[in-house]
Length: 145
Image (cartoon, rainbow, N blue to C red; front, top):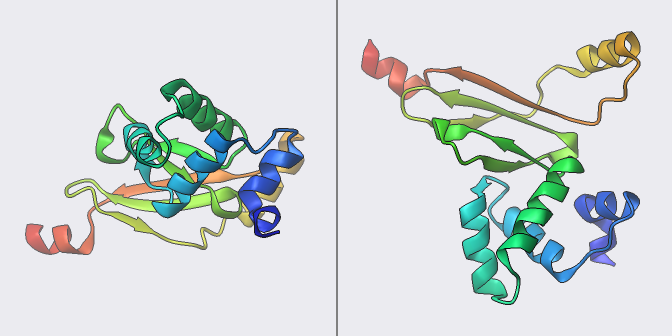
């Protein structure tokens, strides 16, 4: 019963996909890490939980979760390897310090009206967004003063 209330599993099933063991395991890893995790970290954690789940299954699951808007890749630390973030209620917001790479999350981005305007103007249905701002955090600002 608890699985049906999980919004990510609901989204997966509403899109016509089954909840396989590999998908459940990858989802468990993402949620345990609060959704800030690289694909190599996902592979490592999945291997510890269930060594029978192969690399290809993990990458297919990450691709599927990205297509469904469950996760989004972001390039924190300006790495070539994306860090996957969970899209809680379809959105996720960061301020990333350009000096120390500290990630500060925030909830209310104030983009509800912009989303509605874009939907009407472009005749689309927006189902999520990832918003990132870049700048100096308070600690780095103090250091440069």
